[in-house]
Length: 73
Image (cartoon, rainbow, N blue to C red):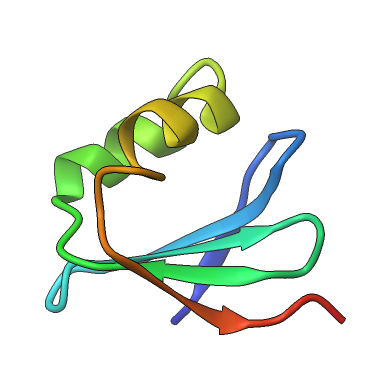
């Protein structure tokens, strides 16, 4: 999945698949997580939030099922 870089102290890049509703988050520490069944509007709100990290923690981190797809190296 292609990700775009974002301005955040926690998150390096964000990717989204419209067909599967998967949201991919790459953190600055090197880990990548895939969040399942995330609506497009939620992803849009995340990318354009004043604080991406705060929005992520409040609206995505504990709301959607996830799987770690890359460990920290």
